[in-house]
Amino acid sequence: MSSVARTSRTDAGLASELRISVMRLRRRLANERHPDNELGMNAMAVLGALYVKGDLAVGELATHERVQPPSMTRTVNCLERDGYVTRRGHESDRRQVVVSITELGRDTVLADRRRRDAWLAQRLRELTPDERAVLRAAAPILDRLASA
Image (cartoon, rainbow, N blue to C red):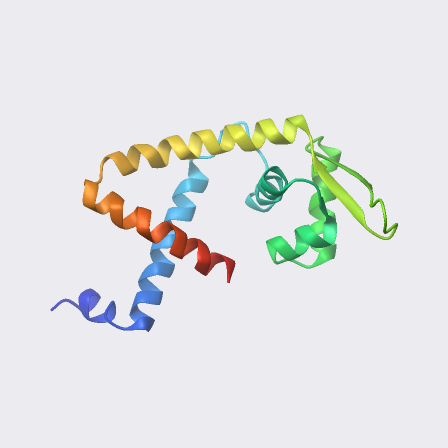
């Protein structure tokens, strides 16, 4: 029996294999970003959150992205400076700032997703139907792990 097969039989071994595989896939998908997109992965994650969830306070964005509020404020400042988001005061709590995605931000998110989804869809077509079924079943589980 190979060392990989022995290792993957334990939870620690599975954790190691998943970590390595997910990190490699993440790096590969990052390489498929649109060549005109100069935004970093953190900035794109913020735009993606705003695209999916709608307007969010800076604190909510920080919590969602698991960063400290000052870090999120710096990211939002850069995104606002470049026209990807706008900020406004919160309607009921003047201490909070609400961030909204702009048309440029939406267009950037959609172009980035289309390009990376196309690459991944092509790779998925190279798999067997059984392999795709395994990944289809694993996707919500991986999402749950990522959200924990």
